[in-house]
Image (cartoon, rainbow, N blue to C red):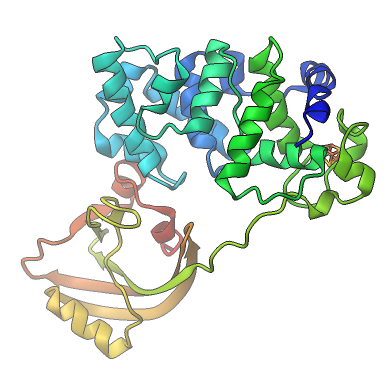
Length: 345
Ligand code: SF4
């Protein structure tokens, strides 16, 4: 990588950022707890989608102590719809460690932040630099794209070595206002040097030094290894209604959506006859089995192809494997992952 090009980034980038930074709830008051929560939420999720979740989360759990002691069900409910639920579980685990070992304050130290559950080099860099003004880079997908384009680099950004090298190169050019600099790089990647579609080079403060722009190869960069094709899993899902309640149950402790609530399901596509057989085994006597609906849900490495049956029942013989909940209870108390929610009428 060309260090000279990187040296030229801070000044125009910071000038642009001071003028154009978006107002964001966690930016108004960048206390460590807020920065941490927002950074975890922003993994895999867009800023606009995160805003209401963030507000609700910090209203409900205003500090590390309340996060450390929150009831798991309430935590899942606050996270419902954001997906990747282990992020929320790790937040609570980390908060408990912070209460026990750091007197309830996030440590102002990059390595110690890295040692907490759910905090990797990027998040540690973001919290350390934004909240504590520690001079470390914070390199996420946005930053990898911007820097690769500025340098005209066609190295594979999915390669961890390339990322580590970029962190080292950035470390050498960090300005005093490292908090703004790291946020400015992320911001440029989010609003100007965007991931999908053509970057807005005419508005970019780095267009005079950007090699990809000069060569007209913006869209060829960054280079990413092709992801492995997702594994497809077929599921038959049962939406079982008994009086004004529907059946839900807990998933197993392992695998995708572990320990979350789910609609009862089988991991294969069943015929109508097999569906009847299955619900009989559950002790459910059907009043009607209605036509099916289909939906797809995409996780990072798995794709679920779901076929749902609506079943009304008037009798549930000694059925202890399901929890029967009303729509209101489902809305207010139980966190049902989006994969299943999209099947509900
Ligand atoms: S000039 Fe264009 S390609 Fe280069 S960093 Fe700016 S927006 Fe990205």
